[in-house]
Every structure is written in structure tokens, then in C-alpha cells.
Length: 174
Image 1 (tube, one colour):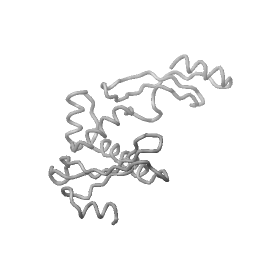
Image 2 (tube, one colour; image 1 turned 90 degrees about the vertical axis):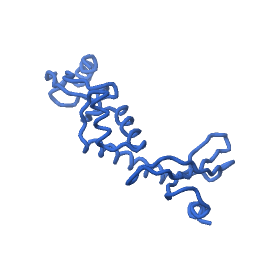
Image 3 (cartoon, helix red, strand yellow; image 1 turned 180 degrees about the vertical axis):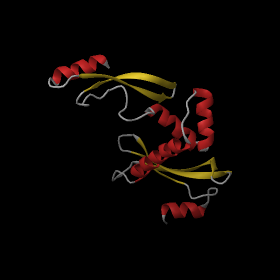
Image 4 (cartoon, rainbow, N blue to C red; image 1 turned 120 degrees about the vertical axis):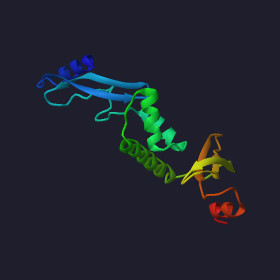
């Protein structure tokens, strides 16, 4: 970070260095505390190593999302992170991370699809899903294979319950 700050100061001659500030960062490997981050008087220098204004790294975000997808509650996730990684994260932060995941899913679902696929596979798989309680439910998946041979998930659906002709008709809108 010091070398990058020097380069920044060389490229921005009117500004000067302005010491350091301390910052904590939570990662999937544990918490890094009191990291000394250099700063400049114009506040223009941003570290390439530390995400700006983020206290949690992308790898920890991904780990939390994976635990949420597997059906763990925010309380249980907080307990696991504290026990295994000695990281304390509030329930509100865990919920915020799950909201980012929901936004990404909605963006993915509204993406444009190709005009043509060489093959389309439809399948339903049974998974334990936690709603009020854990129950086995079918997740319906549509997978397309492009003319170049690349696989692409076209969509997935959770209508509730087990696989049925009625659910397939609803999904395919026959």
C-alpha cells in the first residue's frame, strides 16, 4: 500500500501524504484488525487491496450466502462465524448480505436469453428446503446447450411441493 501511495503522490503533485488510519477487515480466514491504511490530504488515494468502505471481503460474503442458501438461519450463521473464525457479525449485516444476493438473482433472472439453443433439458431435483420448517421440495431447472456446446442455466423454479404434472404445466405455461 505504501508503494501505491508513493506512485499516487508522484502522479498528483499538489497533494501530500497525511499519515495513516486504522481499519478492521473480516475475511473468510478470520478478522484482520488494526490494518494501517495510508491516506493523502486530498483523500484521493484508495487502496487496491482493501475494498472501499467495506468491512467484509467478497469471499466472506460468498461464504455467508452459501450458508443462507443451505437453509441456515442468520442467528446460526453468526454463531458459526464466531465459533470457527472468531468473527462477530450482526444479524442485520447477515441479512444485508442476503439482500444483495436476492438483487443479483433478480438481475440474473431478467437477463436476455439467446434466440436459439441446440438442446433444452428440463429436470426437477428434490432438496430439503427451510421455510417454516425443513421439508423436501422439488426445484425445477431448465438448462440450454448453445450451438457451440456451452451449457447455460435458463431458469429455476420453486413452485412448492414435490414434482408434478401440474407444476410442469405451470412452469412451461402449456
